[in-house]
Amino acid sequence: MKQYLDLAKNIIDNGVWVQNERTGKRCLTLINADLTYDVDEGKFPLITTRKSYYKSAIAEMLGYIRGYDNAAQFRAIGTKTWDANANENSAWLSSPFRKGEDDCGFIYGKIGRNFPKPDGGSIDLLRKIYNDLRAGLDDRGEIYTFYHPGAFHMGCLRPCMYSHHFSLLGDTLYLNSTQRSCDVPLGLNFNMVQVYFFLAIMAQITGHKPGKAYHKIVNAHIYEDQLDLMQNVQLKREPFDSPTLKINPNIKTLEDLETWVTVDDFEVIGYQYHDPISYPFSV
Image 1 (spheres, helix red, strand yellow):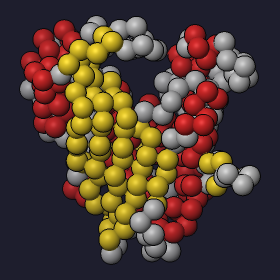
Image 2: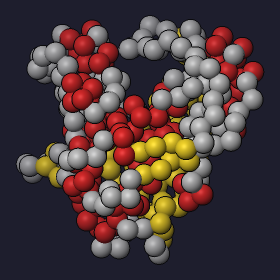
Image 3: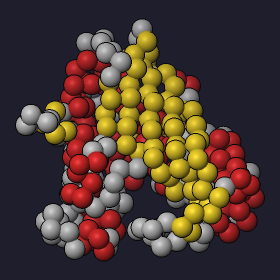
Image 4: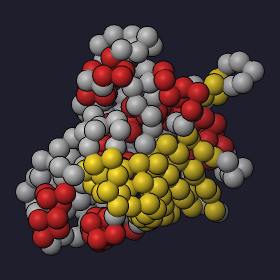
């Protein structure tokens, strides 16, 4: 929580106003932020200065693991986060690549599980990482990436948190996640949960202990219509201690995550929080 609040204060104190073309709004923007999550200590980074909804964040990550490309698929597992991007983004609505209602196109996990090869075909990046880590291998390139500039026009949104790099030292698994752009009041709450979750669940299904998760944000920003709520409401509140995330121990393989696992297999314990804050969402 301290890292999150310090970042928000830093943006307010040192950020620069930038006009965002996609949303038509100004953003108070800071370049470069680094956060660390103590997965090894079980300190789940769920925001406590406002009520946060972790199940939707985990559901979205499950969708990325499964390679989903449709908002209806994401809704079916517990999150509506792709509804607006699939159905309200004007550029995507006029795209010849859009297949119809709820279609997201070539996004996130759809790319990562089917990364195109220059000589034809595709690579399942997550399967390769999983197989290596299960065998105790780390080739210093265990990277699950969603970033493919040649496919941006084929999806409703470029990936924001676009790379997850796993590293194995002995029997301890680490994660470095990189995010090109982050809506700090609204999106970072999700992203913090997802980075923590991804390391915790990958450690469990590959048979390793989780270490630290490192989260790099390149462009961290607060939209102009979010600033007052952040500055005069959320930053005025005292944070509570971090809760813990309990994961169903019966989740043992990647196939489990691909098939029967639901958000009900994850439970947050000891979560204290302040009242919710309804930050505006920019499509």
